[in-house]
Image (cartoon, rainbow, N blue to C red):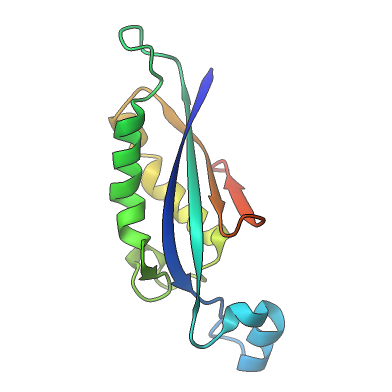
Length: 138
């Protein structure tokens, strides 16, 4: 089994805020991330697929096709957007990195086989250079 990864980048704003809680409780749990006026991140998204190389191309996946797929289905939907307000697939969800990566998985997993014989293995989403989430679809 061979694992191939593609990295993409996007910028987005959000706030972490549970509407069932008071402003004080949100501030206590989420700190500055509950800022009423939002805050932003420069996200790095790494999508890893797995499979066997095609005997004719030697590729597990055409990385250009994978890049176009990620940009079309994810980056174009979230880049320079407010994740809480502007992104339909995040409606009624807390816009945490954990919830984002699960939403991305649900979108990409059925699309990957359309461009190759590979399947989605992992999505890693960096919110900051030191904070990231990995998801394996489990």
